[in-house]
Length: 259
Length: 289
Ligand SMILES: Nc1ncnc2c1ncn2[C@@H]1O[C@H](COP(=O)(O)OP(=O)(O)OP(=O)(O)O)[C@@H](O)[C@H]1O
Ligand SMILES: [Mg+2]
Image (tube, rainbow over all chains, first blue to last red; front, top):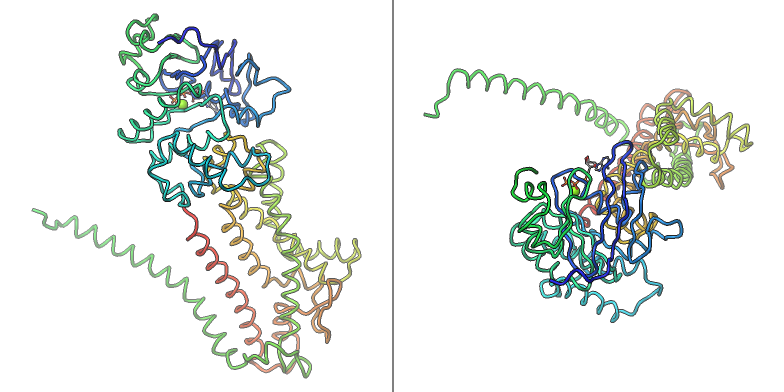
């Protein structure tokens, strides 16, 4: 896979992050390439979620988080003074560990983000229908739900809910999708289906995905980042990381010696 | 195999004993309620009629109905709610959705708890000082209702805040991560999912306010007035105070008249509570997560 020549979509420079006095990230400098899937692995508590959450600035709602260094998305530091948070969130979608569709209809879920950001007061219904179909097609959910778009989203199976949570990000046209263990609440079949979908979405979106599942990282990502205790240990193409890890710690982790 | 042993027998006896104990306590709890209601209905029932509800007291309050008092209570409670509900809900939204945990919000929370613990007669005194005298509203519906409002405010805030906090955090995160502002999140997700709880709290509050006597008796409610209230600066009769008056202050009242008044008061409270319960069941049935 030719991932070397791609431009960087996310670039962190000397990122340090503290929760109060506890330092969770140490000098993280990374280049996440555009249009591929990068997976983030490492033992529990090593700072994967922290890193992910600082990329769409959802961490800062906790008053005691302090950040030092920069995160550039599409060439712009999102922690700059002149950056509008709403625009950051639009550009960078997030999928959570537990599917969290809103308790409204499937259709309204898909249109929720769109309606938030739409400048028109009323979008013609046909246009909205198109948006809904397009988003649900992209997440391979259209066929299952096309006859029950007005049903409650919370009645769907977990797998379908998670797909819907991905679908509702798409009408806002994000460039980056962050996913924090998106399959860990799903059964093996659901996991496979959602993985397949994430694989379909690459190229169009830059995807950064946290996973605990080695096999999943290996199957479903092009580059892989291994973290340990708040530091990036290794960042390389997935195949080479799993076949010939450069660092001893990486090898130990992959072989299941800790975490 | 599977036979009862002596130990089993003993355990079962103990278990039966405790069951009986708890059941007795529960029945003891219901007993006074049943007795009170039974007595009210037995003694006051014959007095009740449409006429009783819709005519004024006559013959020095020893005959006639309760209409001015009934209407007065509706006025007092209505105006009190008009004040306390918007303020209480807004404050609860601020505390649960916007405020971060710091010394300022901690002081506010302390104030709310203390306000809730102030005896109603103290509120009455405050009402006289603040609304009747200082603001110059005189003894009026406005002064009495404001006193009631201040008294009910902490309860409205606490019950609203609890309903807001019952909305899963995951919904808020979903909204924020799509770029919704706090207000958009509150408006589109938090409020629609907590409105049943908020309204239930409010209605229960109404039923509590209806029966209050102390805060209104110095601030706006009077023993007797031949006039129906026309606006918030009028004085008025009120059911709770009327009950006190006919039961203890007026000579020659027939024995069953106070019971009739009490029955109307209780009926109003029960009606309110049933509405609140029915409403909650209706809204519960519609939402699901
Ligand atoms: N809100 C918070 N406040 C204080 N400390 C936190 C907070 N969130 C995370 N931490 C700490 O920061 C460190 C990194 O946590 P993080 O959740 O990023 O780990 P993780 O790699 O995602 O772990 P897991 O695999 O279990 O999800 C941990 O030591 C954790 O205790
Ligand atoms: Mg995590």
